[in-house]
Length: 360
Image (cartoon, rainbow, N blue to C red; front, side, top):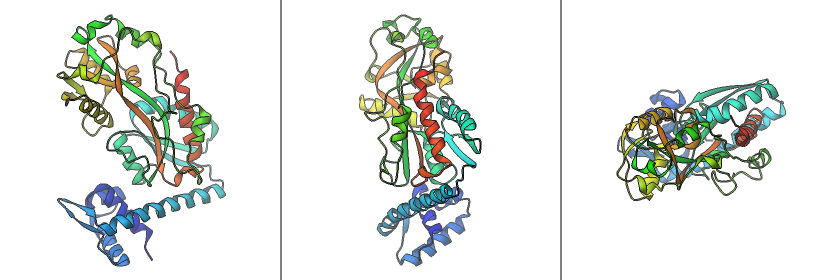
């Protein structure tokens, strides 16, 4: 009989590509991970891993077993959820990993609401970028990730995760005052943006809850799909036509570090426009990115809702067609029915729906 603990080890190695990294994620020693993998190979009678440079990769049999492992581990999550529901377990700790903007917009409001509605549920929040938070969910470090769609993210049909779309927002171009592209509109548009309502449309609470996976409906609508509204500002904010990404070819860029999902969104948008952006300055703090733009260090593209925390007095903001940040919550497949997670996921969606009503 195959030991399910060894299946978790196999999945961790497949995710992290090295025994050392998998051991760190599982809080085991590399030797213990290697021993579990050897035992698993003995159980199935086939080699499961092979060398790949400095790391390892799954053999054909390993990939077959991993597919079954994902199903087995998801079923174990469902079993745990059903047992917890049977014992009416509505008290305990839930860990959420989220990037900073979403913490302010949806996670913190959800925590406040949940404290009143379900005082037995204690939420612990960790600040982590989208690429980190999804790995933390898969490794069991946290229960929920609030993450961003990006090129390297697990696919929407990934059998390890269940997704719940929250909201979507466009990127805007941040230009130094006096920049040639900024002259097309009045220079005080930055002040207009600072004073305007940056509220975001999102799912209604009812539609969002209907998107929750169930045993009969394991999938969720694609983040940013036709039913997911886009965050838009008040109409009077924008004066004059927007820019295209191609207008920014040849510019010096300010942006997040490689690995940050927003860096990937920006780079991909530029690739589609026919050029590779040259990032001369890097920061994952969008307020710092805006400050560097104000100092004339370059141009940037920033998610619209992240601008509300920045000082816009020294910049001009222009809408740009194309790139957007699609935000979703993710849990391990099967865990979406857990009685501690159901109310949290509902309040996250309520907070996302309420973004349209937030005004100064």
